[in-house]
Image (cartoon, rainbow, N blue to C red; front, side):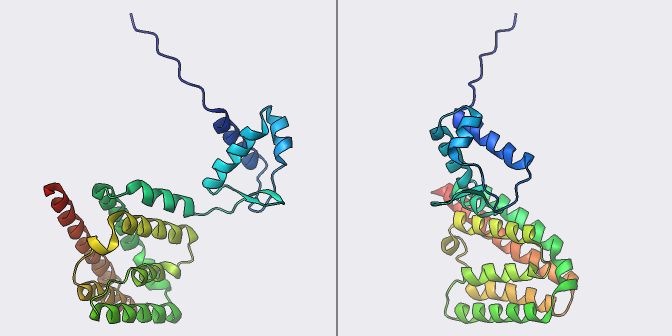
Length: 238
């Protein structure tokens, strides 16, 4: 005879209130900036204390769903990747295996979509890419790293696609990778080599050579993957 399964714990009250508030937002199709009813009204409708409502609101604020405007009220917040960005980078920590997986997703995303950039990119974005690559070169010649320019370069590659979801995902993967892997230590390669990678990608895009752009972008990520593998091996020997 099979044993009786233990009872699962009911969810905490403030978690239940969170779900109710999210359902309220969805059911009423509240758009960003729409106000929620006052805490007292919500507590009365839900049959819970104001403290439970307050805890639920704070939790939803941390998820980027709500925002409290002091002295005014609680409002639905516009969607943002920022909470995911912060939590993903923090959660990965120094786990190089997870960082490698994030890198692979980013690689597939960028290599797969670079063809559309070749079709759409205009003179303004090309000029900014060129300027960013030039700043990379100057820093590389001083044997400096250039994390800020690196992020800007990859953002500029896809800005012309006018896809906010894509831009957000690229930011998430970029920041998660560099925060988790410790940018300066992990990418302790010759800065001139890193600059050359980016220059070659830019040159292929300027020439509208999709095959070359895909190849050079892929090679760039292949080099980073090798650095990760080397770092993983080094840590395993510590």
